[in-house]
Amino acid sequence: MANAASMREEAETIAVKALGFVAADPELLPRFLAITGIEASAIRRAAAEPGFLAGVLQFMLAHEPTLLRFAEETDTPPAAIGKALLALPLGGDDHEHSI
Image (tube, rainbow, N blue to C red; front, side, top):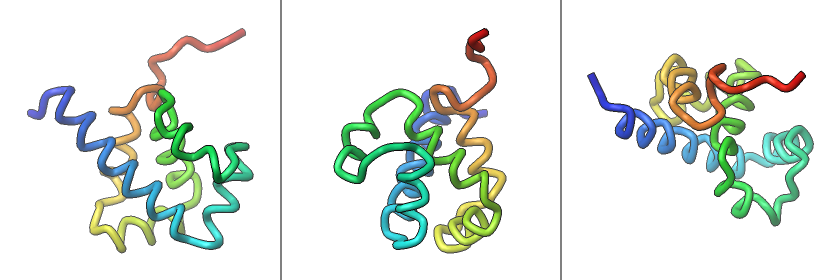
């Protein structure tokens, strides 16, 4: 069984690939920016924030055609993307919920 550090590293690798995939797609990028409220010029800065990479994977998982296309083009099993989400900060349900 992989340790938490290697699982997180693998999850980050998948999320960075997903971000590159979104950024390279002229239809996905504007949708991602609109949904997240991030300006294109702020993506690099936002990527350093906790939860950003989890947000990228949530974006992928929210739209099955995008998820499947990403999985196929990067040879990443779709289930690995969901598993990666859980290994990232703010990617699981183990956070406090505001009231």
